[in-house]
Amino acid sequence: MSLEKYRYRINALAIISSSAFAGATLFIGLSMGTYWMDLAPLDFLTAFTPQFESFLFTIMPLFLLTLMGLILSARLDWKDPDVKRSWQIAIGFYVLTSLITLGFHMPENLRLLAGEYSAEQADAARTYWLAGHVPRVIVSFGIPLFAFRAVQKQANKSAAERGRRHRHLPKIAEEADSGAA
Image 1 (tube, helix red, strand yellow):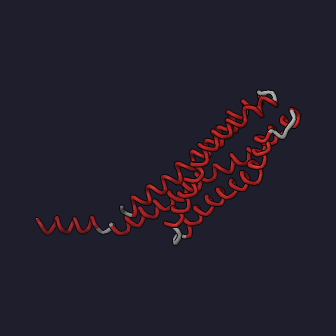
Image 2: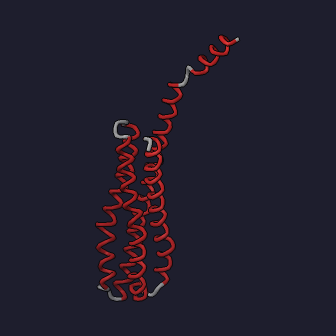
Image 3: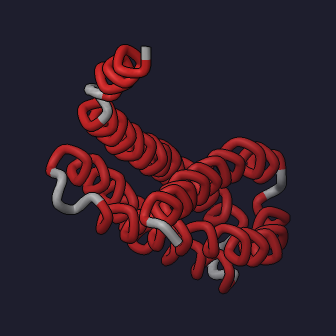
C-alpha cells in the first residue's frame, strides 16, 4: 500500500471515529438526558443499567479507534511542526475527554449501577451526571475539529509541494510543441 493510501485511510479513521464519538456523546446528552430527566428517580436507576451497557459496547470501540487513528496520523506528520501541533491538540482533547470520563463519569456510573442511591439521591446524581456531561460533549467535538484541521494543513502542503515540482511542466510542453513544428 502506498504512503498516500495509508495516510488517507488512517486520517479517515481518525476523523470518522472521533466525529462518531462526539456525535454519540451529544446523543447521550440530548436524547437520553431528556429521557432520563422525564423518569422518576428510581425508574431512572432501573433504566440506567441496560442503557449504560449498550452505550459502553457501542461507544468504547469508537473511542479506541479514535485513539488509534490519532496516534498513527500524528506519527505520519511528526516532522512537520505545524501539522503535528494540530494532531497534538486533537490528542489533548482526547486525553481531556478521557480524564473527564475516568475521573468523573465512571465513578458516578459505578455508583448508579450499584444502586447506592435513594430516590432523592438518584435525582441529584442524575442532574450532577448530566451537568458533568456538558463539558465532555464540548471537549469531544474538539477532537475531530483539530484532526480535520491537521489533515487539511497536510493536504494543502502536499498540494503546494506538487505545484512546485510541476511548475515547469507547461514550459517543457511548450518547448516540445515548438520543436515538433
